[in-house]
Length: 404
Image (tube, rainbow, N blue to C red; front, side):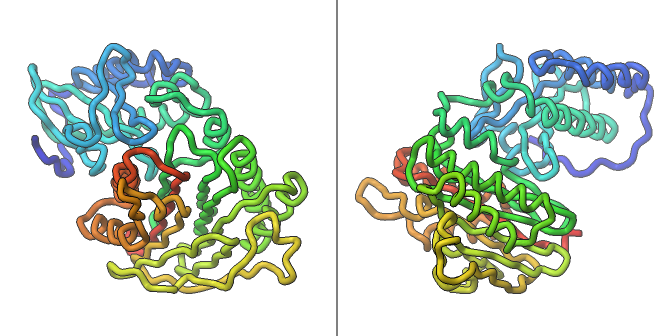
C-alpha cells in the first residue's frame, strides 16, 4: 500500500495523452446515461484521460460494504480492505495489481461519502493521480444526480429487504453528511431496514446550519407518518424564511391539525456558522450534549422540560428557544433514547458515558465526524448483538470556523 500525497503540478507528457474532444463527448453522453450503463461509461472516460480503466463502488446503506456497479463483481468490506481504507479516511490509496497499479479514490459529494473509484493504470505520476481525482469528482456528481430518480442505484446499495414504514421515512431523509467551510453535520440511524419512528434533518441556509432529530411514539406506519409530517412542516417553515421559533410552531401546529392523536419528541437547532451562536428548542427529548476540548460539558445545553411536538398548542406557556455561544471546535450531539438504552446479553445498558467516551476517543484519534458515527453505530449494534430494541439515531454537528 502506498500513501498518496497531493501531486505536484506536472505538465502532461507524451505518455499522458488527454483526448479532450472525446472527453467532452463522454460528458455530454453522461447526462442521459442510465445508471446501469455507468460501468461502461467509467471505462470510456478513463480511456479519454489516458488511464486504463475505472470501476465505481458505492457504499451500502449500513456502510459495511463497497458494492460495485458491475453486477458480476463481489462487494468489498469497508473494514479490512484498501478500498475501505480510502473510503474511511477520504484519501487515495495505491496498490499493486496484476498489471500495473490500482488507485482507490474516494467518491465524495460535498461532505457526503458515496463510495470509491478503482482506477487502473500502468504507472503512477502526478498527472495520472490528478486525472484519477478528476474522474472521481465527475462520477460523484453523476451518481448524486442520478440516484435522485434511480431505483436501481437504491436497490444496488441494499443488502436486505426494507420495511414499508422505513421506505416512506427514508424518502424524506437528507444526505447523511452535509457541510461547509465553517461547519459539518453528520447522522446515522438504525435499524437501517426497519426504522419507523426516528428521523433526522439538517440543512445549510447561507451561513446558517439547521439540524433536527425526532423520535415518534410507536414503531409502525403511523410513527413514520408522524415524523414525516414533522419534517415536512419544519422544512416548509424554514424555506419560508422562518426563524427557529417559527419552525417549532409550524411543526407543533401541523401535528395538532393533521395527526392530533400522535406526537413525537425532538430537538431543533440553529447554528450561525459565522459567529458560533447556537439556538435550540427541546420538545420533550433527551437534552443535547456539548463536547468541548475533549470532554462533555455537563448540563451545558439542558433546559426546562417542554411537552413533545404536537402538544405545544395545549401547553400553558409558549415554547422556549434557548441560546448559547459555541467555541471553535465545539461538537453538539443529538440522539434518541435507543442509543443509550441498548443492552448487552447481561442486560447492561450501553449508557451515556460509554456513548460520549467513544466519540471523544475516536475524534482524538483523528477520525472525521462521519467516520466517528459509522464506528459508533456499529459498536452499538455489536453491543446488542444486532438486535436493537428501539430505533437508534445520532446527529453530530461541529463548528469549525478555523477550517475556512
